[in-house]
Figure 1: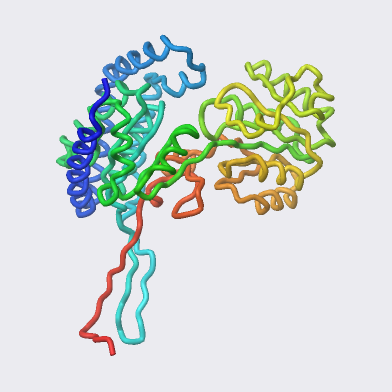
Figure 2: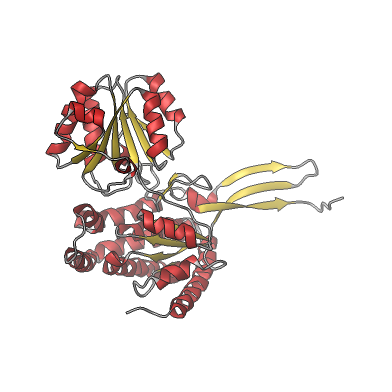
Length: 423
């Protein structure tokens, strides 16, 4: 049943007004109070793990009645370990330094005015995300710690899971004496709530979309609120001719197959022509044994004739599944050119023992994250030491890469004088 747009707009206006008041209160709270809320929310997630898993089972049953992919199902699914990881993420965020206690700059002018630039919350965050229920808990934790209120709109596929997670977080906020309005979710899955959030200029300060290309494209096209964009994770691993073969095998297997549905999963393998005849068949065998399929260019198929042919579109595809695009290239500059032509500026990796070549690769790309001798799946807020992440930013303004506490703050100025007047 669809709701009237005015109903969604009215709900959003009320929710955002309450969120604004909650954000102001959070910003004034001592760090200990915000940390207590995070720890209470973590404890509530653990207490209510059975209810959260039961809600997730409802979502999975509805998903299984359709015809979705196994990789998407994996993103949707919760397990006891994943619920514990959500709770541990909140505890980890509580243990991090206070992002609001930072003086970013401090100077005194010739006239005696002391000017300090200090970190401050952004205000009210709108988070629109798809499928992965844990995103709601991560976003709530990061926003609470950084003094922001957040309105979370999860995907319809994860509706019951998101509601159960929110109920646990809200219980934790109440126990810690923090306004429940600091974390809110719409009461239904109707897309009118998305439209209301996108049109909420003056009510929401920043929209963060986290999901597939169609979601991000819609948000960027329709939003009347600033957007911190998370583009496709079209990530590349380039194996240079000086790569250590066993390292290349283990890193690529992890980068592609650890979890195929995450945005940091490698989607394209680039391998130097000098080593491809010997190494590519081994890499293909490794990945095929793990259930991977391939789309390969002509040079790769000349070495491994059983691979399916890749189209140009395949090299622009974020598979989010056990499929890998493969191309043979002539050296680091050709690899860089391929990534610039086909990538989304998310995460790229080079495997090589040659430090000079690695440096050339790292400097030659403008992707948000570039790695040397490491799996692209390390592009993650938790792995970066952020406690969690609210997304991976691939735009050029405000934040890039994993978005954690620091990226959820802005700044303001405190100016101290002793009676100065401007001539």
